[in-house]
Length: 271
Image (cartoon, rainbow, N blue to C red; front, side, top):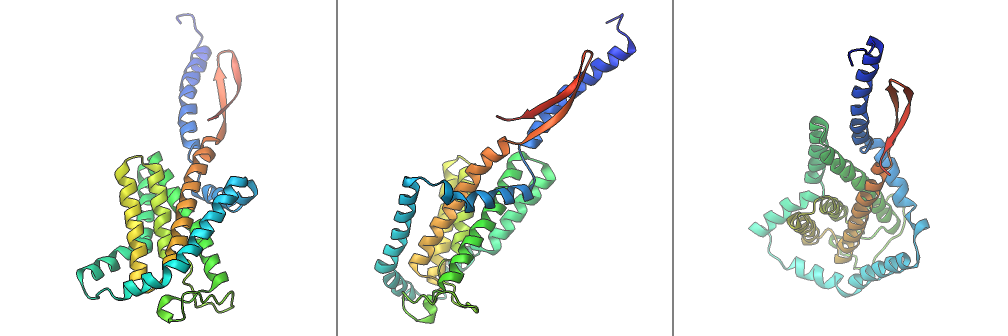
C-alpha cells in the first residue's frame, strides 16, 4: 500500500464504498412503489382464471355451491333469528362499533400502516401497507361488480331471500355481496398471511366474522351475502400477499462497478 498511487487509492476507496451500495439497493428493490404493486396485483388477480387448472375450477365451483347452499338453507332462518335479538343493549352497541372494522376503522388502519411505513422506512411495514391497500382495492372492485350485476334486495326491503333484480342503470339494491364483510376478511387475510403468530390469525378472522354478524344483525345482509364476502376477501388477500412476495423478489437494478482493474455494471436482485 505504501507504493500505491493516489489514483489507485481512490479507485480502491471508491470500490469499497460501492460494494456497500448493492446490498442497500437490493434491499430497496425488494419493495417497489405502491403504484407498481397495485397495477401488478390487479393484473395478477383478474387474469388468474387463465392460469387455473382443473382443480382450481373445481374449487371455484365448490365455493359457488357453498354460497348457493347457504342461501337456500340458512338465509331466511338466520334473518329471522337476527330480527328476534334485542336492540338497545350492550351487544347492540358492541356490534355497531365492530361493524366499523369493515369500513371506517379499516381505512384508518390502512392509512396508519402506510404512514408508519413512510416515516420509519421499515420494509415489513411498507410491504404490509402496500398489500392491504392493493388487496382492499381489488376486493372492492370485485365486490362492487357483483353488487351491480346481481342487484339483490337487502333483507330490510322485505322482498324475500331470492329476489335478484339483475343489472339496472340505477342500482339501489346492493345486498350481494357485503362490502363491509369483504373488506374485513380481505384485511384479515393480509395480516394473517404476513404474521405467523397464531393470535394474529385468530384476532383478525374473529373480528372479520363479527363484522359479518353485525351486518346480518342490522338487517343489511343475508347469510349468503357475507359467506360470499368471506370467500372473496380471504382469497384476494391471500393471493395478493403470495404474489407480491414473488413480485418483490424479482426486482432488479443495474449498478456501476469500479475497481483498480475493472469498470462495468452489476445486476443486483433476488433469484
